[in-house]
Image 1 (cartoon, helix red, strand yellow):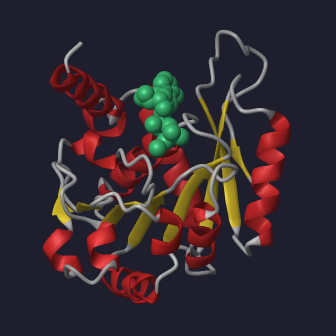
Image 2 (image 1 turned 90 degrees about the vertical axis):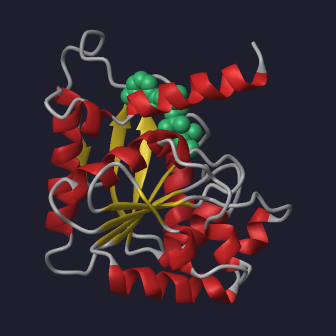
Length: 235
Ligand SMILES: Nc1ncnc2c1ncn2[C@@H]1O[C@H](COP(=O)(O)OP(=O)(O)O)[C@@H](O)[C@H]1O
Ligand SMILES: [Mg+2]
């Protein structure tokens, strides 16, 4: 397959994955709305508005969860910003068919203002800050001072900020993002995430003073697991 065809396939696949928007009545969208409600309950006493989505390893559904959760919140008329902070494997832009020329990294390197690079999506109230130019030193870039002022800036402007991140066990970025967020959601992929890895990820996040809001069980197959149910609970 040619490079363009591969890109197109990837884009179409991601667009379809934005199920809360394209199939709002599906049971999966309903699950995202349940998670949304749980987040809202978590925000009653403490200000829980900046939330990092992560998981132990690659391919467990972090980006899919981040995009759909951000969409579900925006559909309730909250002003939402989705930030793609997976600087190694950015993918949020695919869900909305937006290019990734400028984004988070360009702001962190003081090359652009936030307002220049934040993009509107097809979903009203949902804005996207794509990853931007992929840097040679992703780990250092999230640690720059500008990151803190950027977080303050977005906090003042949006009701919710959802941050997509790289896997916890692969690089330290998610721990750093957890520190800067009000809460973290750990995605666990049914039949894919190794229990020990999920535990290790949780430990690393807690050690980094990340507040784990809950765990999302992704790729759960009701037909295979008849006795249990899909859950989103306190850890
Ligand atoms: N619940 C699900 N059911 C089916 N496919 C899924 C599900 N969650 C994620 N995927 C697919 O799995 C792949 C990896 O998901 P992604 O969200 O990109 O993971 P991560 O960001 O953790 O690497 C994508 O192709 C995505 O469309
Ligand atoms: Mg991802």
